[in-house]
Image 1 (tube, rainbow, N blue to C red):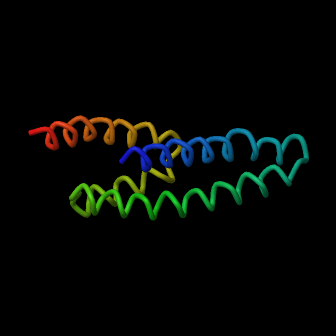
Image 2 (image 1 turned 135 degrees about the horizontal axis):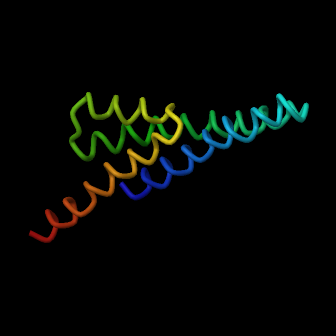
Image 3 (image 1 turned 30 degrees about the vertical axis):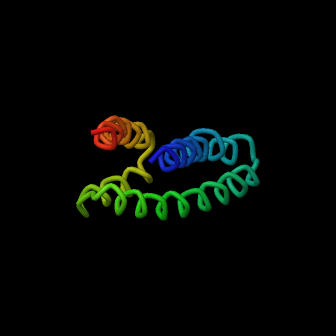
Length: 100
């Protein structure tokens, strides 16, 4: 889960960077390569995010609707903050279950 949390944060930051830095640079500063490079990086990170979300949902026993919610939040700006909240709520539960 910690790896998925890290991927979620990095992917979310790449989406915010794409939308709020690279796209304005393309539009207002005539720098189309900013979107090209950040877009490629974000695309690769989103594929990794989707794969790790599927693995994390399987290992955690999430219902399908929760996995779909987490996957949907990957395309919502700042949605990664809510995903991080969900994961942090589950991590103490998983560690407490292992010690019991």
